[in-house]
Image 1 (cartoon, helix red, strand yellow):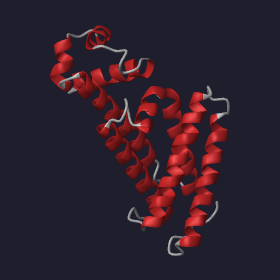
Image 2: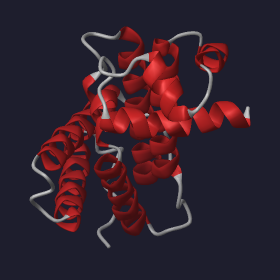
Image 3: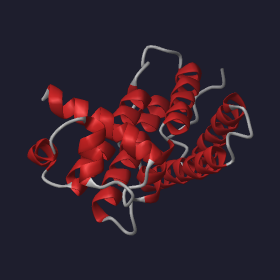
Length: 196
């Protein structure tokens, strides 16, 4: 499995710089310095390889969001959002693929993206309320905030980071605070955490 992991690391770099359609399996094998058959052995197809790379990228993103549980809530949110922005900044092609849903309409990439969103919503709910199971309105509000994070992040990386990452992070932290305050107005049983 170490060889498979190496191929995924190489693929993350390749797809970060080159679009899916522009890379052939021959190109991938040449860049990885392996026989094309090895890639087929582990991934069955170029698409399988691409999906494995996306899943690996997503796992990294979700793991970062769920880490640092020992930190105070405000610092944890700041660090999580900063890590999210760093990920998008350093893996722009993978981030765009995850958020946009892949090449054309790709049901499998959409499913991966939706899984990431649900994991992120669960992480936010757990941090804010100490539980992952939340009523529909709370889930919808957190999803709305998360989709705005995706839009802001896409715009930020698309504008060659015209704003400092700290500024974008602080903006997103503040909008989360406001979202949690609005949730409390509609769902009093889900109070916003106290301000730091």
